[in-house]
Length: 52
Image (spheres, rainbow, N blue to C red):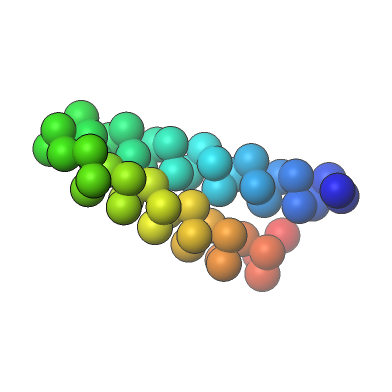
């Protein structure tokens, strides 16, 4: 795995964790926080390779 993809995957994990934790802290809803985490991770994986 190249350093570029390692950075992109790490950023996707961090973005998913932050979005999921913030959503859970706000609403207390597990399914909603999982959907937010997966959405943030997916958006990071789709957008960040074009920028890096």
